[in-house]
Structure formats: structure tokens, C-alpha cells
Length: 290
Ligand SMILES: Nc1ncnc2c1ncn2[C@@H]1O[C@H](COP(=O)(O)OP(=O)(O)OP(=O)(O)O)[C@@H](O)[C@H]1O
Ligand SMILES: [Mg+2]
View 1 (tube, rainbow, N blue to C red):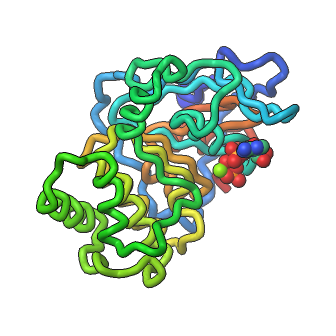
View 2: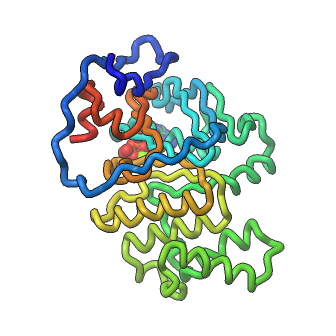
């Protein structure tokens, strides 16, 4: 096995009947694709490995449909883990389990060292404030202006903040996403990309330490997707956010991933950097990079 391929990890804990990727030989370098201008994420100095999310043996079924069949996954502080997988493999279900929108049948989830199944209501709420979630179909509140949309989470969670402090924070977040001029606009007047950015600003305004992005670039054109991916990288750096990003958008994965997890049949099938996985000889893995 070549040095490169040793970097692609497969789960030791994979359930017995799960197909294992065959890692033999070194594939030729991939053909240039339309996203060749997208630079892979610059390797950053390895931060001290401090897991902020640890998922072990996570299983979730809906009636007799086994969706998650023993997922093991961790995220270190300051790391963005990109989750790839075909449609319907349980990627959204996985991150919904992290914020208590779905409850696993078995397995454990630790966030900041706390087993979330053991948290009471108020502890879970406190944890939710530290964990931002950009939904797959996350919409803004249509009847509120951009300012009101951003003020909404502050009204709920930052009751001690003065009106001036809130306004300053709203402005800072809008500057972060480059949309200060849209403060008085209604969501109906925003483009798809602008709505995503405002959605991100509304989530980041509570200064989450963890961000969960569910398909942040879906439905956007290539240029706008690129901008959102840049924004994910910029805000990650600025606020030292740890994150999981689910995406089908390979340029987004290439730009933002510190590590990539490939999900198949309800388990983690392979894991590695974008470059490692791109060079895999496993046909199924390679199919993501065509
Ligand atoms: N609340 C639910 N009740 C029943 N089945 C569900 C529920 N939520 C998800 N599922 C099923 O679980 C499977 C995984 O769904 P999930 O939304 O996690 O897929 P996904 O990997 O995010 O797909 P996509 O890439 O299309 O977003 C699907 O077959 C879906 O129909
Ligand atoms: Mg999904």
C-alpha cells in the first residue's frame, strides 16, 4: 500500500456486512476538471487535537429503514469536517441527531465532552446556543426585515444586551457577510446567495463554537457557491469555529475541508484529505471526484 493510501482511513468498527473499500495501487492523477481554479484548502498548522464532537456507533432507523448503522466520527476544535455521500444516506439525519432534532436509537454523541443524551432541558438549550445549524432548506423569516431576522436570536438568547449592543453586533455580522446595505430589506428582495449569507449571519450572531452546515451552497450558481465557501473559511478562521459541512459541491469540499468523511450505507466508508481521497483507486470513492 502506498504512503498516500495509508492516509485514507476506513472504520475498524465497520459493521460486518458493510462493503470495505479496496485500497490497492496508486491511481493516476485525476483529469483536470472544471473546478481546477479552486485551490484545495491550505494545510494549516495542526492544532492541538481536542475533540469537540465525538460520535460513537450511532444508529438510527425510521420504522424498518436502517438509516445510520454505526457511525463513528469526531471533529477537533477548529477543524471543518466535510461529509460526502449520495442522496438519502443519512447525512442530514446525522447532524440533526447532534442538535436533538432527531434522537438516535443507539450509540453516543459527546459535544464538548458532554454526553448529550444525559443533558437536561436547560443544559441542552445552553449547548444549542453554542452550536449553530445552517439548515439544508433554511429560510429567513419572510415577514421580517434583515435587521429583524438577525435581532431575533439575540432577543431570545441575549436578553441582557442593550439595543445599541445588538445593533452594533447586527452591523458587524452583516459586514462579515458583506451585506451591510441590505439591513432594511425584506428577504423576498434578496438573491439566493444573499439569503444564504444572511442565514449564516443570523446563525453566527450567537457566536457558536460549532457550526453544522447542511448543503450551504445547494441551488446556487458556481460563482455564488464559491463566495459562500470562502465565507465559511473566513468565518471559521475569524471565530475559530469547529464545523461539519455536508455538501455535494466538490469545489466547496475542496476549499473548506480539513478532512473528508465519505458516508455509504449508514456508516463512514472512508476518510482522508481531499487529495488523498481524490487519488483513491476505489471506484466508488473516485466517482465523487469526476
Ligand atoms: N423523519 C423521518 N421519517 C422517516 N424517514 C426519514 C426521516 N428523516 C429522514 N428519513 C429518511 O432517512 C433517509 C436519510 O435521509 P437524509 O435526509 O439524512 O438523507 P441525506 O443523506 O441528507 O440526503 P440528501 O443528500 O438528499 O440531502 C432518507 O431515506 C429519508 O427518507
Ligand atoms: Mg440532506
